[in-house]
Image 1 (cartoon, rainbow, N blue to C red):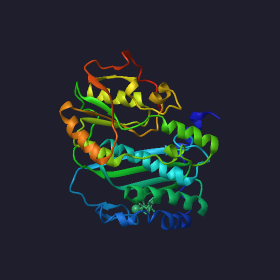
Image 2 (tube, rainbow, N blue to C red; image 1 turned 135 degrees about the vertical axis):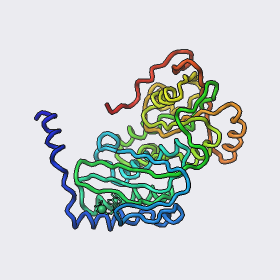
Image 3 (tube, rainbow, N blue to C red; image 1 turned 45 degrees about the horizontal axis):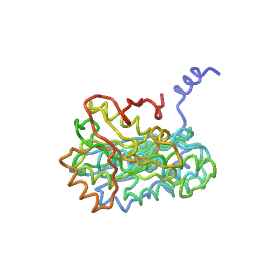
Length: 322
Ligand code: ADP
Ligand code: MG
């Protein structure tokens, strides 16, 4: 069948919603009570149950959406619990990279499953996420179709907003932690099909929210490593119109993989951030107090290239959808 023809048919044929009775039952039983106890503190005046949610804010709103697709962002056969958790945590990571504070999340779910086993497991993942980050599920959508989880995270400004375009020449580049654990976790999960110490980095990734809020006061720019360290550093370079000079010996990575693999694989959700020299002392003090690690890996330079161990490096390798 011609793909284009198929595509056309799909686009004019509206994907039917789940039958009314099961749709509302699913929302009622599995999606209405996720983290509602956090809503008051987060100034959510209305969560699930009306045409839209209502949130009262006095600060700048920081919002980000991420869609996770079966076979692209999570493998077929993964427990719904982990598909849900992973989709939420990877979406939340963007707020960590902005140095922001999450207050709520919205979920658009497309699936062909409508049995209790699937939704109980999915709910477990949502609840774990909600408890880990103290945010409630405030609304969303549910349709029948290809398995896909789209999560919108709503947050607010904490101190400074960490943008990608604010790094200056001479700023020092830091990484929050080891690269490669996401890839290793995925490989491990594909082999053993269960959660263990290694696969948990992939199944239940951590969004570095407290870390992001801590560096926000001092850093000039930041990005989270979602598509690959070099590719994401390339985004900082392009946005800030600077280059970076790095030394590979200072980049922390999982020694079960090669440095090259770790520089190009995604799914780590570590933060790359830059700090003006004048702020380093106060940042170091604060990070020590909070027991957060940070690894100095290089300097920002005028030449708009990434230079690793003296050689210009291609940044064109990480994950790309198109
Ligand atoms: P509407 O037709 O007005 O868009 P829906 O019937 O789609 O409303 O949804 C009813 C309520 O359930 C809304 O408050 C909506 O936000 C919530 N809801 C629907 N799907 C989800 C979901 N996947 N997760 C959380 N809440 C949901
Ligand atoms: Mg409505």
